[in-house]
View 1: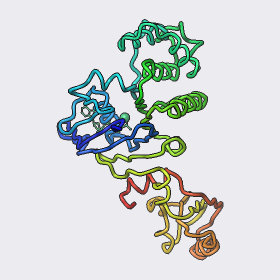
View 2 (view 1 turned 90 degrees about the vertical axis):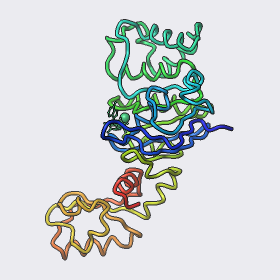
View 3 (view 1 turned 135 degrees about the vertical axis):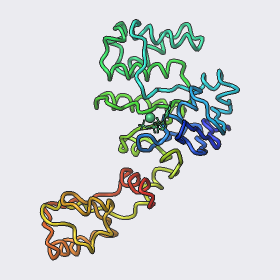
View 4 (view 1 turned 45 degrees about the vertical axis):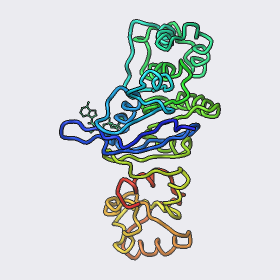
Length: 304
Ligand SMILES: Nc1ncnc2c1ncn2[C@@H]1O[C@H](COP(=O)(O)OP(=O)(O)OP(=O)(O)O)[C@@H](O)[C@H]1O
Ligand SMILES: [Mg+2]
């Protein structure tokens, strides 16, 4: 079975900048895949190349074995992309927008599916509203709907939940998870790492155009060993002897919250005693299991 998305040695440069520096990635059919990384890491650039909207300088990309350049029409048909930027035609209603999008794929009688998509995204009430009259979050729902009108087997969402309310996020994830259960491959970029942790089975982390981590989510989480203890230091500083334990060494030099690595909860007492002796007043402690944000911070600092 071909990869849902195959990215081979892709390089993309802009004058004075390497947006992607030789990225290779295989995403299998049925995966719920996360593409994470800080602003400017190259996520949208990679998605634009997959969607055939931007040309790579080197390398190749295919969607279910169809090259995105030489076999653009087929690869585009197999793909649904929710873009990061809100782009739409203000003169059409929601339903018209979705009908026009269906028309691009030669689907002339698509209203049953359009209605189902709108209903799943809580858009039905806005079907006859003009696009320009919609709020930002509603426009984003339409972008998601547009990407799904042709029931693409591979769905790529570039920050679909940026700036949208809790209700839409929950509605959207329920729908996307259903599509994934039905066999659709999902690729997601998001800065909400708790969403990625809950949804994605495998994750790639990009940094400055390079993949710096690629693994199953549970394996990534396992890399951050043990527990974390978050100390709220009201006065003084974390004693020098404890700074090696700090997950963020810069934070360890200030008062306020600092997260320490623990291999065992029996270490709590010793740490508190060391703080007391070092003149640091601890106002609060919290024990936490590691999460994807911890992994992300470690990976981006280059010490994982
Ligand atoms: N058309 C362009 N011309 C010049 N530079 C560009 C262009 N498009 C993107 N870049 C640069 O390429 C790099 C990667 O940008 P990209 O949009 O892919 O990042 P991203 O990972 O999606 O970030 P974000 O999380 O902010 O969406 C950035 O440094 C960006 O400024
Ligand atoms: Mg982006």
